[in-house]
Image (cartoon, rainbow over all chains, first blue to last red; front, side):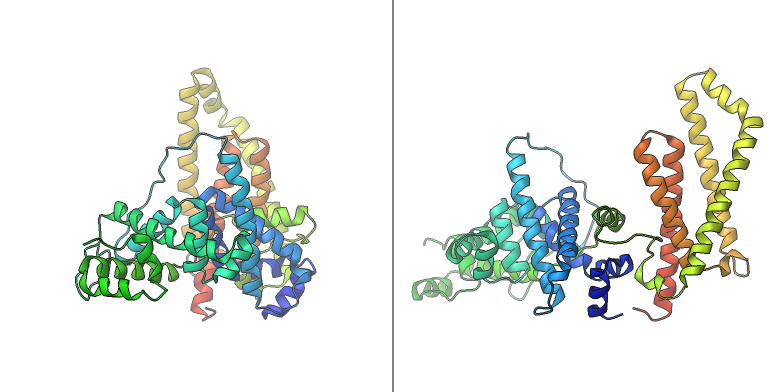
Length: 187
Length: 221
């Protein structure tokens, strides 16, 4: 069944069509909300909220943009809004000292794992800008729109975030001495 | 010589350097290397893969959607590659047969435990909580062993069940999993209900893997 038919049937409340859309787009939705959340438990809630909003809003989808783009934007907005709420709550709670247990990894997987760990450790504002710009390829104007800041603020946050990432990665891996022609963070 | 700050180097990942910065980068291996690392870091961030959501994520989403009236959840919804082959009549029939079988099984187990298994329960109750826990653990192990044996027998080529419809089985198991989840929410500490739910989920995952494997062999991906 093609995407247009699936969307039409999902609009009509067809659970199978909703499931098919979910199966198709869940990994992309989950990836962006997980990175914005910076935490597995929060990510589950954010992802669910994103899907609920998307299914509610399906009748308003007119096909002007690609469905994946439309859905992605809803997911980002839902995650950012939920993150703001969570941040407010967190201010009144004691910080957790538990570090997540990570299974062993090697090579490229290890490198990506380190990036994900460093992302999780970034302050929320920096993380959001870095994810939207460097991971999700948003422009500074787009970021300004979704975060409610100016493009200039987005830019300066991005530079700070990249620098902070670099420091975090150095701490995590004691890595980088780059020889000519070699990749960074050899493992 | 004063090096460029990390923040300035971060800017140079995407923006052109000033003449002064360019001159510095030409003569400073440390800053040039640091800029190269930052560029690689940015490139790699853009290549981070998608992530699979955790198991059971869709099921809880579907329940919320149903609660809001956004979807009609009548019969259970198997994964999309499973729903294209079987007819709904067969699925519904399978659910009815499966539940009928489960009910009969439960009746038999209840009767037999009232007679032959009674001493075990009495023994556990009569000694202490640790003894009871150990009895439960032993019974769970025996149950899981039996389940593994059953699955091996059931999946042997040529047996009646190996020729059954895995999508219908998946649908029936999903029904059981949902019922189990409701039951466990009502009695979260009940070992029997937890065991039943865990078994149904494990079996459902196994069926799902078989369906996915068959789909791949059919060239659906």
